[in-house]
Amino acid sequence: MQLSRDDLTNAYTKMRTIRVFEERVHKEFATGQIPGFVHLYAGEEASAIGVCMQLNGVDYITSTHRGHGHCIGKGCDVGGMMKEIYGRQDGLCKGKGGSMHIADVSKGMLGANGIVGGGPPLACGAALAAKQRKTGGVAVAFFGDGAFNQGTTLEAMNFASVYQLPVFFVLEDNGYAESTSSDWSIGGHNPVLRARGFGIPGERVDGHDFFAVYRAAKEAIDRIREGGGPQFLHIEFTRYYGHFEGDAMTYRPPGEVTEERNFLDCLSFFRARVTSGGLLENNALDQIDRNITQLIDKTVADAKAAAPPQASELTTDVYQSY
View 1: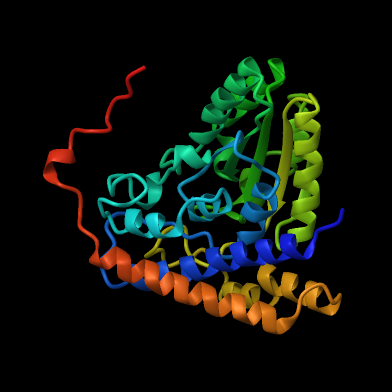
View 2: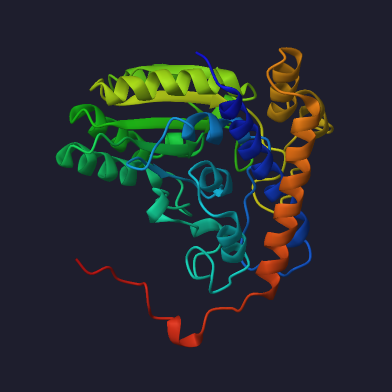
């Protein structure tokens, strides 16, 4: 596996964009200006980017309630995302979806989802369409450890296996289904073996290591494109914030998040590896950091200045006509 300088720069830029975007949303949410619920993805960046770098314009993804990172990974406009989170009419969903239902079908991002386990069946639909239309497209279903115990997810895996659909099931295991430890709640304690029970090959990787995720995702998606049927990936990492903004996280041991930020940061690991290997320079990465900070500053300012949806828009975008 070889990544060019441009590939590495793109990967770092997108991971840094997710981190700065999420840190800023965390800060802004505390002011009370952002409506609805917010679930942050910070700490999980290597998963979204390691997977989405394998995708192209004919591919689709389904997300979770923690969907900002997936949006950025699939190429959604960051300014439109921030406006959507603020509930502005120029947001990706005209300000009517908010953080938990953010989507951009034009980019192949079929939406964040407030339903735990809601994404995998949708991914099967996209994959079935790709197979019938012979587009060569792949559908990626991102879901969490809590969703892995939902019937919708297991039924989707069975359906994908029976019909040999081009679906990539990506279990993002951040250790907690809301406040319930995945070490306790997943029967058998080995998601890869559960996937194999459906005849779906799988692998477990360290989600703090971008290169491990990238390699595993590339191999799996290549197999899918070659007609190998559905594949499964169990990615283990941590989240830096609570299940939702306002979560006191009393279920986590004292100091756990601080230690994870200090010693289990996918961005720090990435930076150390590429600079020690002479692949990228610290000053180039520092410039990316500055550029991203300026970009997010602008998206927040633009979102705050943007207009909310008009009352006349309330009943639009409810039904789809075919």
